[in-house]
Length: 178
Ligand code: SF4
Image 1 (tube, rainbow, N blue to C red):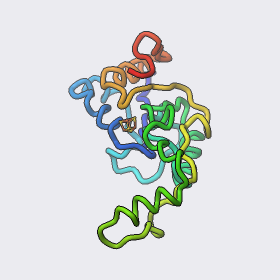
Image 2: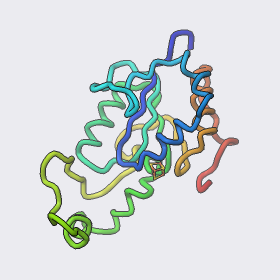
Image 3: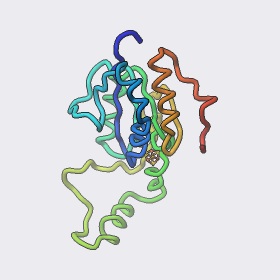
């Protein structure tokens, strides 16, 4: 890429561990920083997801109506959409609740185990969907980067390859279950 690449990261239903792994690139960020504009991310103060994004790394599964709206918008504005980490690739930990009815999960979390003010929140939090799904069940995904979280080395490889104008070949870098 000759111009600066417009890069974004998105945090859906995940623990933030994948973003922490991204930050674990440490000083190698200095190699990447001159080549990119970070246009949207939990680590920058951008309110709206912008148009014409070259690459978006997506952490987390889709668990709420808010997640659905976000990922559809992000997909429509992103050239290369990357599922970053097992939650976005397979559903992983957030999808463990799929074995139970949503009402039972909320009852367990917000009533049975509550020590104060029992009751699920009904305002100012996104309404959960009955089932958690990985990204590709809702939108096309261009690249799957497995791991819980993916290693900083693997994330750096992905970013380096994309910035060099190549599609990252992960077949020699990782495998599922690693
Ligand atoms: S893949 Fe692992 S580290 Fe990443 S958001 Fe999910 S649980 Fe957290």
